[in-house]
Length: 146
Ligand SMILES: [Zn+2]
Image (tube, rainbow, N blue to C red; front, top):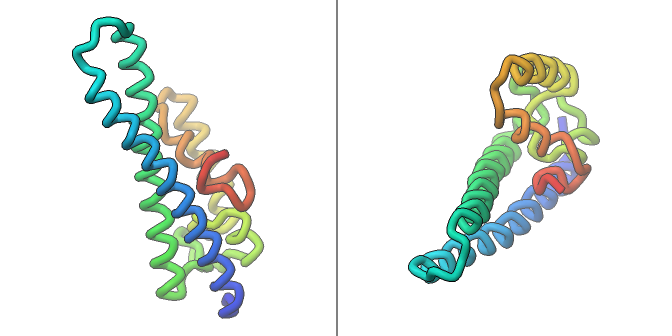
């Protein structure tokens, strides 16, 4: 069970991550608006520009995904279940939550999950690993994936 002070601390980390995401989200948006204006110009290598554009959009999707995770975690914080593992119901330590603010699994379940994911990854599915890597790297800045 977390103390009020610990909850407040985690809330702060989550809110901060959300603000940071909102800022990068605005970049992606302004890029796509510029892109609209550039359509029709013949001086730009279109395939190259398409590539940049789709990379931006992938980042944007990722931001939306992380936004969803943060919102979900704030809801878990509000209803008092943030320190309960979604998978096994055991407690997640405050230290772990602080380091991985968007995690919903205890360390045991997370490790098991990662092993399963690695196995799936080897059998050829892409994408999912990228999403979970963001959660487990980068300490307090984990939600930004950098
Ligand atoms: Zn668990």
